[in-house]
Figure 1 (cartoon, rainbow, N blue to C red):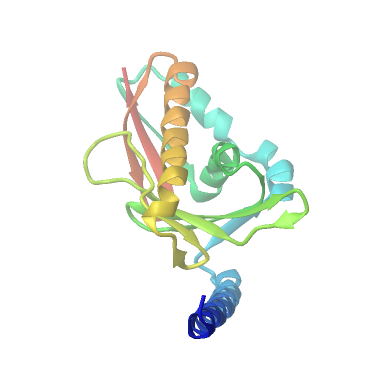
Figure 2: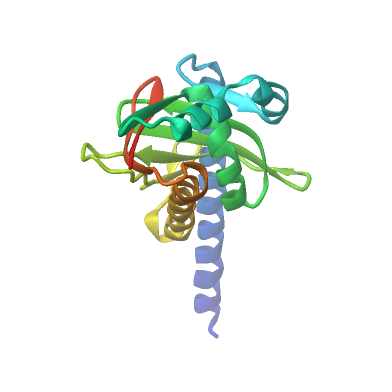
Length: 204
């Protein structure tokens, strides 16, 4: 290799390294700024691991499902609050994340919810990760996620595709489990994602 080629190679490597360091610095600064705004956002509700343990027994989720099962009305509805849905989502998303979810938060809108997860693997605290939960206007029992985020960074689909496939399969399996083992013959006809709740319509 000539001296000129060596100098060019070293210069290119140095420039690439500097650009990489600058990008990491920018990403860290942007994430830190986003996190400060996120924790102050009053439109987002959260629940921690400790709260799940202490509050779950006081909630009427199981009672709602029991009443739904025992009802002989042809078309029946059951409504879960945002807080109740956070508890229901936590178990299924814990299996997908592969770690211990310290906090789970929700930003809700009509037809689209955004779920935020703060996960810990061993002693390593991971950054906030978010995914959207979508329901179209058709009468179906399908919920699906299209996007994955780290903070407010949208993860390119080439990297997020595998994770989103696992998330969507987990949601589908959870709904199937509820239908087959929880509702005793009833099927979920429709799911509505509302700003303040989730409404499930079931029937025989």
